[in-house]
Length: 71
Image 1 (cartoon, helix red, strand yellow):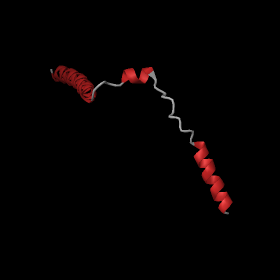
Image 2 (cartoon, rainbow, N blue to C red; image 1 turned 90 degrees about the vertical axis):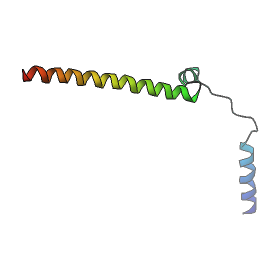
Image 3 (spheres, rainbow, N blue to C red; image 1 turned 180 degrees about the vertical axis):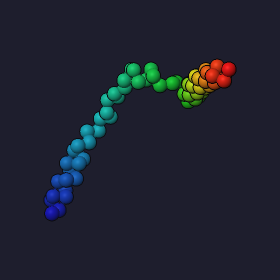
Image 4 (spheres, one colour; image 1 turned 90 degrees about the horizontal axis):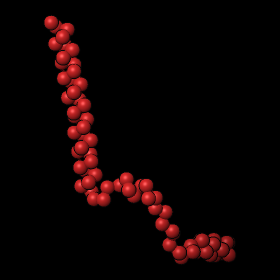
């Protein structure tokens, strides 16, 4: 039993090569990420403004339709 535990410990230590893993950076993913935290917030803010513009336009169109139907 002690030999089995010692063997398992040796195998576990042998699995660690001591070399750091090679970086697997994808140039596409690094380009898509913003360079600073506030850049991401600014992108989110711009998306929200764009959505608000679309919502306002739909509301204006709906108001025009209602106005035409009531005349």
